[in-house]
Length: 565
Image (tube, rainbow, N blue to C red; front, side, top):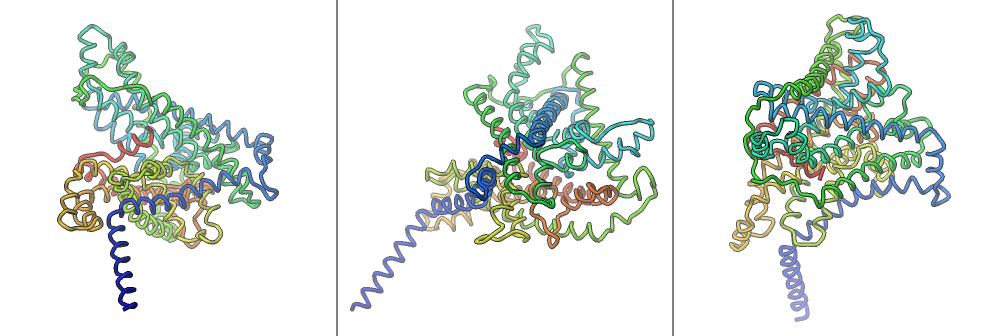
């Protein structure tokens, strides 16, 4: 009898536990996801910040004192200036191109747009390679025009960073311009306002959110991406290359690396807070609230000519950069021995790194898309108070400078209980938690279009929450999951700033391979490998464009909008 009662109590306990889990499965999943985000985002970031104020003797500020007494503060000032200059040029050029592609002559719209977006399919440091081949001591243009240019230093870095991140600014501003009600401008024109007056009084004020969002994302990318900077900086110090040197040099000093990372993170956080402060209580909604078609306008020469000069200069440099890198990949020694060769294309070292990157990128894409979709479901359908924290943490990974997150992973997972350094796992995890926000935003967009009544009907018919998610929700949001997979895969292939600290000889990554060979002066091999990466990423971008038409939304616009706002 006692044994029967014990079995009855055990069955009752199992039944109640099963019912509790089924009832609260979304909230439980939210807790598990928060724990994962805390371990793989909060912990690494905290490790970086703590390292800068905690030495062998305990809490100390001597590393910050050293920062201001050594040359590092000059790196900080140069980095701030680099961010400001790059952001200013990108926003200005991005606006000019976006205005022409939405308000300008029809024959200019499509060519300008696609040529401006070309850098999206290439690693950012492609422009460091192209600038060296074009304007270096033995560069094509240098020899053609018999010039004596100094490309190493601030000038070369700003030009390279501007071309690399121009598409980000353009996409955000173009999205804002497309969403504006053109009847406002038409009404002002009918009332006698000049085109310049309309631009100053109506168009530019309504684009303030786009300018703020674009400024934040371009600034973050400009100060944290160090491929172009490390190759072209010369003797000019910048924070990101200094952090790399401190960590990978002969005398490794993680305390100073943490201090420098803090100063790399500080301006990003300040800009984010200032942007939210100015954007929070201000309205920028047009009268109709609906986007309207912007037909071709008869732009005045005083506006058309300056915008055309800016747009064609930027686009021309981008096209020229791609062309010269393609040539460099099939040339023995660019500028010295221009003999055609296939040696760099078939180089086994580059192909080994490419295969390794494909493996890491595929795994990161799969897990990143799955994580993003799960977080999206928890955020939209969950009823616990920490939903905003889960979403915010996921977005923080996307907003965090890659250099800081790379150092954080190196510090957090370099010892038990999670000893991951030197493995493929750490490379995959870094990319998953850094870019999972893309899948999350895509999933949120689709879930907001799915009525909760569909899921309630499924549960009323006896299906559990996991079954409902698998058989009802997942087929509907599958395009968003695929979108997240392709985006994470594509970005992991070309990303450098975080993984450069985590790669190992056993698992070489193509982005690090290109950077190291280019930094050592082997431009031909770096160019040929870049060409292969561009080909792979171009295919992914083509799939993304097809899926954009299929799903009815643009994940590029969504993620940049969320990130900037």
